[in-house]
Image 1 (cartoon, helix red, strand yellow):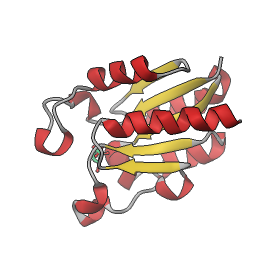
Image 2 (tube, protein in one colour):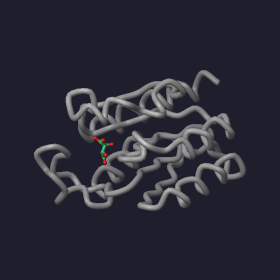
Image 3 (cartoon, protein in one colour):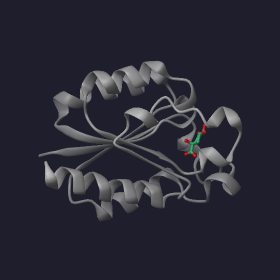
Amino acid sequence: MTKILILNGPNLNLLGSREPDTYGSSTLGEINTQLQALATHPLVFFQSNAEHELLEKIQQAPSQDIKFIIFNPAAFTHSSIALRDALLAIQIPFIEVHLSNIYAREIFRHQSYFSDIAYGTLTGFGPLGYQLALKAAEHYLARE
Ligand code: DQA
C-alpha cells in the first residue's frame, strides 16, 4: 500500500530538550505518535544526524512503495545540494517542514535548497506543521 515517509534531519532527535523557546517542548516521538493517530496511509519514520543515511533513505523510497515524503531537513536545509539532488532524482513529491519560521531567524536560515522543488512548505507552526503537511499529502494522494 502507498506509504508516506516522515523524514527528519540532524538534531531533531533532541526535540523536547533542544532550545524549547525555538522548537517547543514536544519530542520527536510525540510528534510521530500524533501523526500516526491522524494518518490514513501507512507511515514510515526515519531520523538521522548523518547526511548519507538520509540520502540512502531517499534513494530507497521508490522501491519501498513510498509515494510522498514529509521532510524536515533541519540544518541541511541550508547546505545540502546532495539531498536536493536525491529528491530531484527520485521524483517523489515532498513537503518541506520547519518547526520554527526560518524566515524570521538568522539570514543564513533564509536560504533553502528545497523550497523551490517542494510540493509545498510549512514553516513556523511547530508540531502542527507536520500534521498540516500530512493532511496535504493525503489530499494529494487521494487525487492521484
Ligand atoms: C529547523 C530550522 C533549521 O534552520 C534548523 O537548523 C533546525 C530545525 C526547524 O524545524 O525549525 O535544525 O529545520
